[in-house]
Amino acid sequence: MVYLFGFLGFVFGFSVGLGIINILLRQRSMKEIQSNKKIHWIYGPMVWVAAITGCLIALRIHDKIYL
Image 1 (cartoon, rainbow, N blue to C red):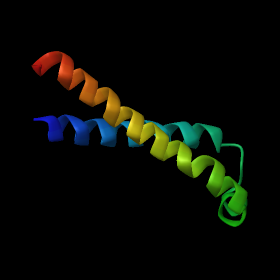
Image 2: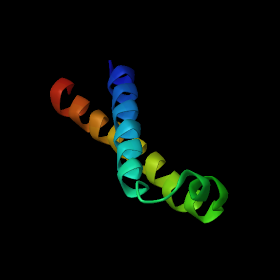
Image 3: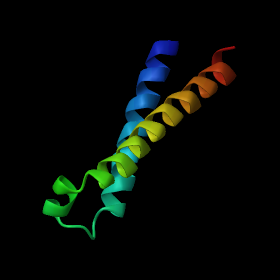
Image 4: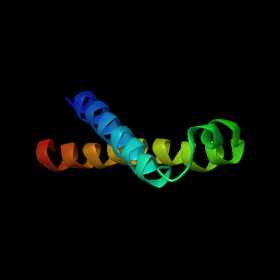
């Protein structure tokens, strides 16, 4: 059960992270996003941080419910 909570938390966090960068990158053109490598290093890790945070939150919820 803990794996299910962790997986679902990771997926939910990842989708939240993608939604956040979608909002933040809305003003930039597709060509600028593809060519500017600085953007990749700023916004890319934001998605992974959100995914890991979602996983950790889901695991804490699991601990509160089942332990």
